[in-house]
Image (cartoon, rainbow, N blue to C red):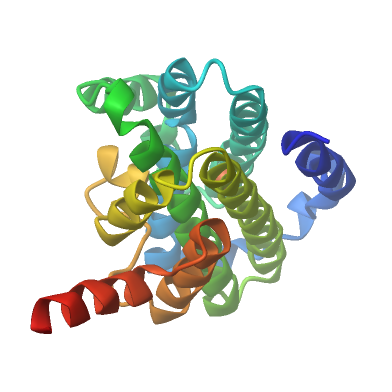
Length: 245
Ligand SMILES: [Fe+2]
Ligand SMILES: [Fe+2]
């Protein structure tokens, strides 16, 4: 079976219709407005989700002959649009600078990110960055869902976090497939993981990935180990041991 089919099946199972699965009418607006730092984090996250129509096709152009990868990225685009719309709708509902996510602003932000074009030789690195970015996004949303006191937002962010964990695991499966086809790819993945840079940094100055997010870093190690059979920390340790011989 293809890599993407189980992911498509779990995406369909986990789907949460925007209209009916969020209690839009129950938002505690006064409480939400007191959590200024959370609202500004949501705005950054929405900008990153809204950047996917630039990021995903660029990656797809490199991966056009990998049917699994293009399917996973198509799902990412669809679910990313749901995330973008949900976050924007929430920010509008609580009256947080609604114009900040206007179409003009979105287009302007995408334009800034257009500068970085994808190079074919960077394919594996980009795919690794994608998988790791999804994982950091999952922990970012999970942390925010625990931080906020506003119950509707907490539920919404938990749903989004679950989606991002699913996206990260699809990314890991795509990497594992490449390693099965060519074991030498593992080295490229490990190198990219060591130099990981969240793709959200293309679009906002404060990326969603916290540098000291140890929970996410440990999970990233597990994800890479799952794909390569060795984790970035084991790999670094190996390089260090080899040097000290
Ligand atoms: Fe997302
Ligand atoms: Fe995602």
